[in-house]
Image (cartoon, rainbow, N blue to C red; front, top):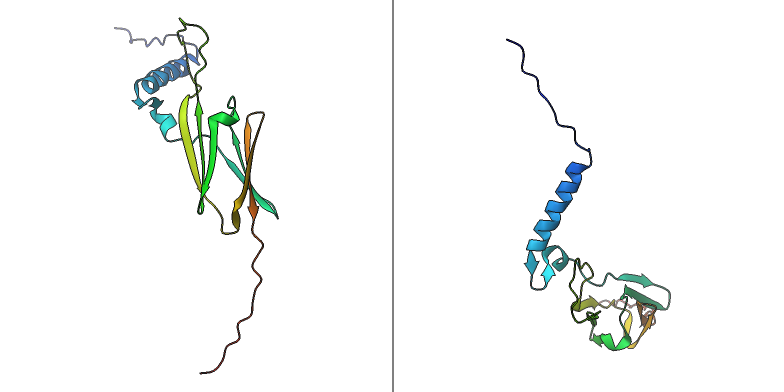
Length: 151
């Protein structure tokens, strides 16, 4: 009796990865939290970069497609909040989405202001989809030597 011969079917080496990607997308599409996918729920929006110069703190947040009336920046005590909403633009009355990756809806972020932040001197500008919040710094307190007396 002859030996059994194993025959491996020829497959494109990338086909397995394509199949895995399709299956992962199917799983993601089945898992919603509210009106957001679970993997979006853990990400903070918008992503923010914070910089410090000698005179101020700068907060930069990309918010493409938003107008100043879609945004709100507030400062209360040592907290700065940014709130906004991205609304869906209706293309036609009978539109059907084939794929939607751009997140729509309301969002907010809150930040603790540094000790030297002057919450009375905060300004915000929106230019080409980039929100820039400028927070002036208070002057540094001078170091004062305290005399120690004997009791």
